[in-house]
Length: 330
Length: 182
Image (tube, rainbow over all chains, first blue to last red; front, side):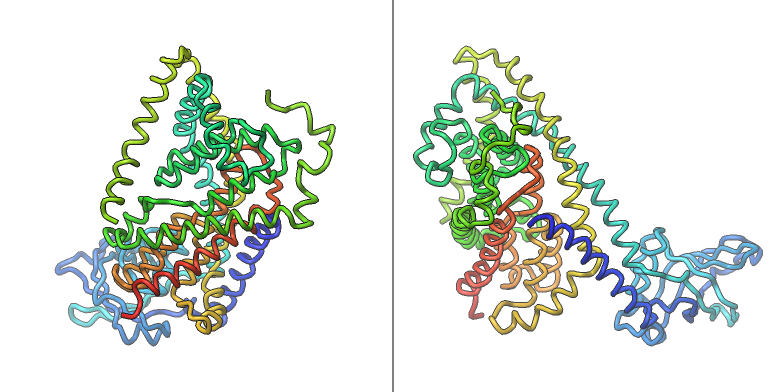
């Protein structure tokens, strides 16, 4: 299933990027090779032979809208500078200027912080110089976007994983102490009657029960930092019971489903950061929805493990492959 | 409801320090060589994190590409008329699609909605409940199964997504019922 979803995401990304790019190309959205009429305001008493001259760029809103066929309007004036070289004059907008669509897109495509283009002939009239600017052509921007996204997110994934090292080490260390002291076994025996119906494949008194309870409790209290290491530890405990190490067992999927339902009594910090105190009103609906979806998650996992397709792939239902054995944890 | 909120808030603030201090103290009382055991367990931290990397890269780059391609806009455009018929607000669709894929991405969607509709609008309430009551399913699959090197996820994706879809729909109707009418 994940194979198809994963491949589907990638293929869909490529397909949509190409379609969007062709559509943009057909409508000439970026007016490649056409020059946008603008007016430049030079500072008083600037030297004409200077290489770099600061200017104020004026774009007429109506001209802009009809030129790009958009509704977005530019600001009345932008800061920028003109750079004169032997190859001609280039106009630079100030870095990170608040540009309207599609100028923003043109800048993103160029990969720089400042939008730049080739200046046309300048028609001097008093303080205001009428001229035009031709931006560098934008070709297949979406294709470039998805490639860039692939690279960026590969980096992000490593950052996230490495960012987990500290918390993981802390909690795995603490849990080791709890294990050595016998706390985990006691806890497992305590909560086992509650959890056994959902995890019938886990033998009585197995430490996995304690880890599952710790993981779910951390979720309930909104302790995301603690929930992840505890969940991983719970998975490791379940993995010791797994005869086929690369395939998820029924208890593993059950635990995962319970985690994706994410029962919580405390709203996530990220949500509080985004919508502020309004969150207080939402606590009741969040608890209600999350509780109901926990029921749906466990129910679905319970049903699906009985479906013929998943029953066949159950690691505990078939004899362990001889090649996969020999690495059972003690 | 307020006292309950306070109780939970304080409890969740207290539980981590209690655990971090309490477990070593408990170990000492039980005669465990706490330092040695801690280090032994903590050793695993790096190995587990590194183990997750390939799974996380696989999931995140595919999701990142999908988001960057503009496919989301297209999905919203095609599904909008269908949703209108069942009374599901079409404005909620981007949130519903992106929530199981990325946490930071869906937080950004909520932030956009706050800017567009105002923090006390019913749509933002729906988005907030969706955000609070579901998890980033694909990320969880990558991290939890990645840590134990499980590649064949069997019914994990359908079970997780069923719960997500249910939660999205329930969130919309519950908020409508609680705060609607205005």
